[in-house]
Length: 178
Image (cartoon, rainbow, N blue to C red; front, side):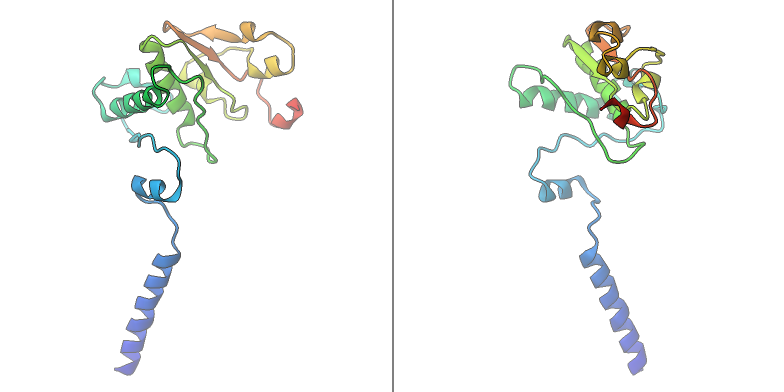
């Protein structure tokens, strides 16, 4: 019996120790506790929206569309009456939805009458190309190299107020631009 109690005690202690050292973020409110930055919105994932589709493919009252509208509204309110000059979306991991978020926010801002430029600066992934279903040969890479002016690389998407700057030439090593 003493061995049984010792085993239960060690197992319970191990579970408590593992819980204590676990720094996994499981809920949005934990982010607020860890970092003193404004928390915008949790955008739910949706199996109904394809990998390269925008919110226009969903019902206008879907949870994903509503969450994106909340992000847009919070961005507008954060600057008072002026729309933000720039919004940067970043992540350290591929496949987290950066391009999807950028494309959808750009569409929502443009639909709201705000002139918008969506830029794809992820030279390795080139996600906006698929999101906007565009094959634009010239883009950011060519502008940075000085081969073309910015005006030639930017093209108007089918939506009023929405311009897009894609990556341009694919580079396996972006450091060659520097």
